[in-house]
Length: 416
Image (cartoon, rainbow, N blue to C red; front, side, top):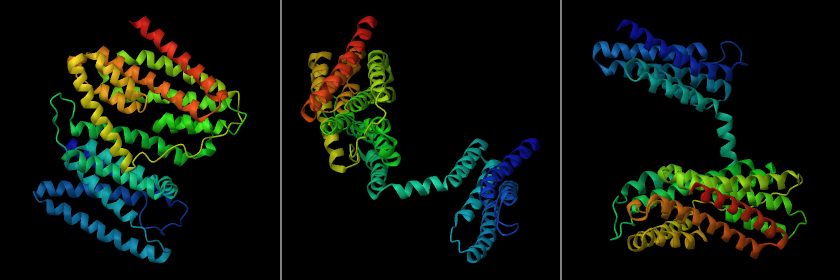
């Protein structure tokens, strides 16, 4: 028992030293005695937290620990106040970090050591990420910040309020599932949107196309097709469009893995083969044309409320249609709806197929419906490229897409 207490106190001290290492490194250039707390002081904060937690347990009074926390906060806060007045610093981060170290030290003694250690690592990482976080805040706009708030409302408020049961006679309309899938797809798209905003177009065509395709490979393809009207160097644009198609395939595989991994064996082979062909073709075209342009403004904010509601409505309608057709015709009805909806939105088609009843359609048929949706979406991208760009752009893209489709079909036949 005593050995365990010594060990826990050691962890409490280590927690303080970990955070103090970051605090001390940041103030390493300051004169000795000019700062309120550094490596040693934060180490003592952690150790004191552990000691007060141990005293509180021995005396059976949680107020002992609370009194210790308030005392440390008052002492540290007073010194921080005077340091701030002298140096013109109004940050309260140091005081909050000291309180956090004291609390985590107490948790290491009286609670789960792993949680305390994880909390210390997270606290140190947040403190060390000041420049990165501040730079990010300066670069993002109010639209991106509002989108993050919308995501929080969608997941923590709206999602729990929706009923988790089917509301139609075919078992396809479950509002909570539909909203969850809507949030998931919007979040994946938002990751691509933020990547483009943070990296910027200066990183080149490759980064823009790859990150942009996380949100919409169709939008990237149309933007590239329009650019091809104004330049003679269409080869890199075709390569970027091929890479966008590759990302779209990989993105769908990630969604399938997250939501219904049992279907992955039925779609992974053909999809990965097609993605590999598109990726190799795209890289070959890009590497042979180093002076490439880059697409601009290819993305819209994926958390626009109207677009989300339209997506959710389309997904709900397709889910009901899929359930009704699968109940009456089996897997053939699901394949037809996936092909039709995949022409316009691959996410709606794939999610609709993933929600199909495996007993009615069967896992192989659901996999076939997803592959059909991917093929239909590729056809839709080519059709839009024909409308938006010149033949010197869409003809090579058509060739890359056809080669990828042939490779995927060959894998499917060999696997069958």
